[in-house]
Length: 140
Image (cartoon, rainbow, N blue to C red; front, top):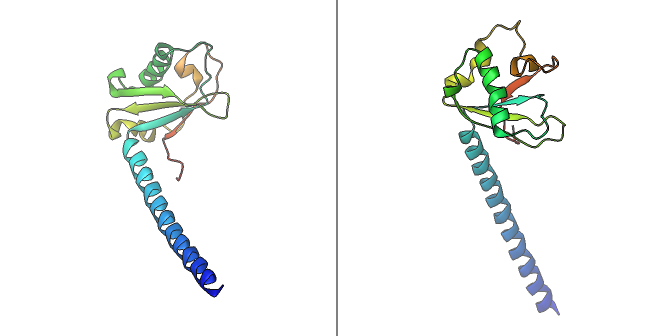
């Protein structure tokens, strides 16, 4: 009976050691994912509170963002990619990637009195505040 008990104890200690190693590996993998996500987002900004149109296409989204970019004295050629992402809110945020990190900092140099709103995107929209921020990872 004591041999069986010793066998179970050694088996349990082996399982606990494996569990510790697995937790350590999971933590390392989470750190790697975080690093890769941050490395992939240095030129990205998130534009929130932009109402989504019914049946919105990529071209519609491009024209909205083009209007915004022109009102901020940037060129459409400065953009690399844009897309909407799903959100819990009704207005899905727009992820916008610039060609360089320097262009991403446009919001830091503009006059603080001028607030970006939906009329910068499309004059027909009712005036509603639009928020531009960096693309952050889930851990940040």
